[in-house]
Each structure stands twice: as structure tokens, then as C-alpha cells.
Amino acid sequence: MNEEKYVTDLARKAVEEYIVSGSEVEVEEGELPDILKQKAGVFVTLKKKGDLRGCMGTFRPVQKNAAYEIISNAMTAAENDPRFPEVEKEELKEIKISVDILSEPEKVNSISELDPREYGILVKGGHQTGLLLPDLEGIETADKQLKIAKRKAGLREDAEVEIYRFKVRRFEENE
View 1 (cartoon, one colour):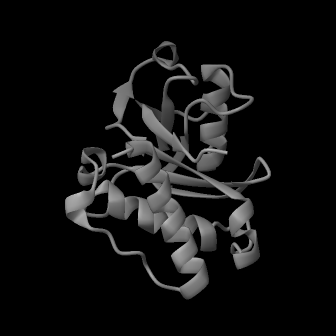
View 2: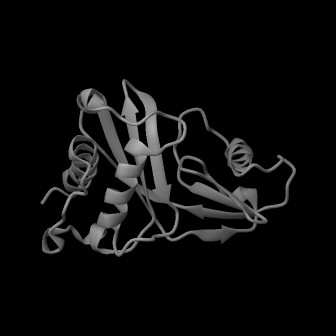
View 3: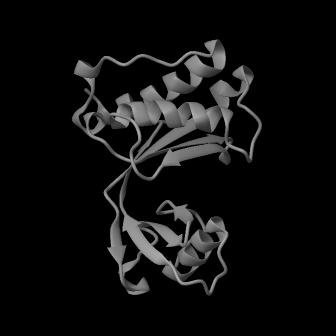
């Protein structure tokens, strides 16, 4: 079984089934690749003509395994990303989907332990959190990554925060 194709096909089926019929896609648990049988945080990103069209995720798993995490986050990215209107049926063929499966986060003590190409980050300041996936266009330095994550959390640039880093396995649909 092609693991990459299975992961992106599952996300695509979840989006299409939900947008077309309003229902949740079913999975055959016995057929899942090993990576989807585990619990993991997952982000699903939708792009249209190269531009962000929706992205939702869970930093810590809330479903019984990564497959259900993908289904839930794919539907939410298509319908409930507050930055965008709901995806329309007519757009489905133009949308490319990627799925990031997150590693367990680890606390870091210094910005020198960060690398925005290799690690995503989560910052926590009080009850506020901000997350940034790794290897994003235009984010070349750990300092810039940290500033953006703080801004996403609604924190000032000079706010004291706990910093966690994580890796992702990125699965992307073929063109």
C-alpha cells in the first residue's frame, strides 16, 4: 500500500464526502497503514491555485487514531476555518491537500534548539498558545518563527513563553 497516497486520499475523501453529502467518510480500520493506527496530532491544509484555502489541526490528538484525526480536521478545514468561506463543490477539483502528522512535542530551553526548516513550534504564554508548522515559505529564521507564533497566540513579541518543538511527516497530493 502506498502510504502517502492513502493519507492524502483519506483527507480528500473526507473533504469531498462532507462538502457533497454532509456526511463523514468511513474507514476500514484493518486496512489502515501503521502511521494512521497511532494517536497523533494532525494538520490538514487546503490550497487553491497555490494559495491557502483552509487549514485546521490538532496539536495533541483528540480522536482514537490519526485516521480519525485526519477526517475530522479535513472536514473542519473545508467548512470552519474562520479565515475563509466554506469550500464549495465547484472548487473541489482545484484544491490540493496536504496532511502533516506531528511528532510528540518536546520542550526547548533556548531558541538555538529551533530550526524552522526542521521543526514546527508551539508557544504557550498563560492560557494562550500559538502554533506554527515547519518549513513554511518566508520563514527562514527561528527568531521570525517565534515572533509569528507569539503573534498567533495573541502575545506581545517580548512575552515570556514556554517553547515546544515538534517534527512533522508531510504528505502531499501529487499534481
